Picture (cartoon, rainbow, N blue to C red):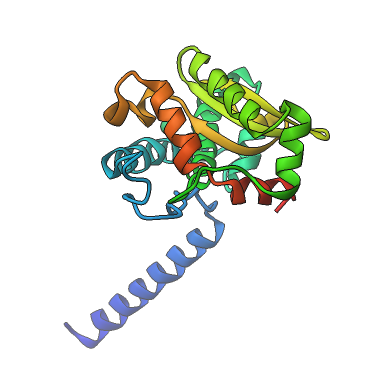
Length: 227
Ligand code: FE
């Protein structure tokens, strides 16, 4: 390489670096796949690592990727995920974006709604709210199980704060309470992909295990306090 071509090559390389930096500065930050709050085997034996790996690594990642594809070049590119969900809800031109964004949001909330050695019941203020709204922890448990097992098709069962009451809400498909059905405290995913490998069609067994061994009441209590 002559000295002249060496200098030109250097200038071209430098221009490339600057160009990439400028493009990066102007590119909207994509929606990222949040890390799981625990290892894939943390919910065993109630939810297998195989289910978690597929559910997180394929289903949730698929929703995040679809969301980024559909956001590209739109006015919502770069917006936080929760804002994308709310802005695309009830917009017939953005149904696919809403479905992808809401499913990405719901799944992150679902993982956080569980923990190793969860279950039992809440303490303090949330226990008192369950008593006032349902008559007690056992009545809440029965109502939640009934709601989750009778939801027809795919969807989510939630505990939400609505005004000063806690309520159980079912949402179909990708629908989510953050579009106006209350502040979510907990959720269980009752799409078949959440439990089919471990429980086949026995959704009630999955929800019973979720209530007895997985539900993360600390997360619900933090949400109640607005954390
Ligand atoms: Fe799911």
